[in-house]
Amino acid sequence: MLVGGTASVGNLVWAKPPEDLMTMNEQNLKKMGVGGDTIKPLSLSKGFTLTLYTRFATNLSEVKVPGAADYASTSTADLVLAKASAAKTAPKQ
Picture 1 (cartoon, rainbow, N blue to C red):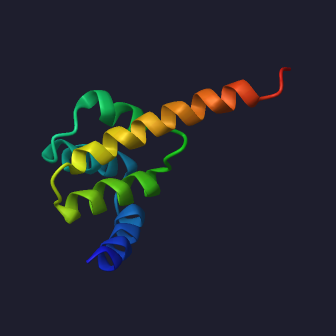
Picture 2: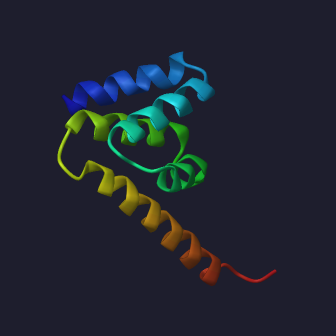
């Protein structure tokens, strides 16, 4: 199912306006119990392109495993840590 889901997500990204994709992603994550405090950083992250964010939200919602919302929370935490790490190692200008 995930292979088919990935292919259909690719089609969605090209067929829908970005605003519709963001709304769809938010709805998919909310249905899994992901809170707004997690959704907002994912949607605004430069580490997640809109295509990657759509694949993540769509495929995670299709898996339907207990605790799936925790994956979104972990991803948000990883993005925050990566951003902090990049800021520490960036050359000073």
